[in-house]
Length: 276
Image 1 (cartoon, rainbow, N blue to C red):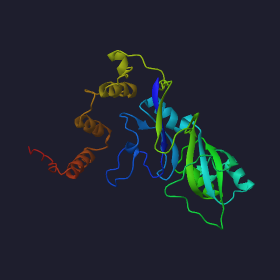
Image 2: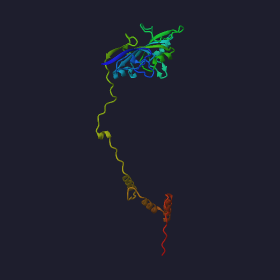
Image 3: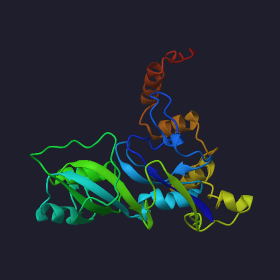
């Protein structure tokens, strides 16, 4: 079993336990139970049901959008919404962060036994106000207010009446009660658990070694009929092959001398013929 706290959050209270910088009212002014945290949020200028728990899986099941936990609000709007506005709310409204999911909405009278808000909602004789009951399954930031404003009827007062099957019946502003509910199981890890492997298996299959340079050159030499004393041919071998393929010794000397000069080496000195 898990512990669940149902709180009727008053207007102007932050959905957190500390506000050291500004000193505004927080949940610590009403709930004195250690180890509990709010499951979801309720804006400072909104009132009504807020759930708190010390159970992580239950907190996630209430607050995470993937569970689509329904939330029902009593909404006082500026003006008298027509059928077209209600139809738009039921079909989904385009907001800056995308289209909303279809909502359930109906006109209602002012809820019986609803407490006076402090400070009170502004009142204008020329423009009437109306009450709607709106149920959504999303949790976007200030979503209800943005939805009613998008269809032309700004929200004046917002009271959350229910979250799922839990309601604020019997709770006055600032009052809470504790109940026990079945604790959901923790979400399983994604994917099957991999079996432990030995060190050799963990390293994976060994890659085949590339043939050495000597083997590769040896294979090429055998294919072309060339003779190499070593796998890596020396410059002397190249010069010898060039000399054999040249037409005259002078060409060999000139080429060799030019190659040395380009490398910054000392010019090749031709040996003088010996006189008899």
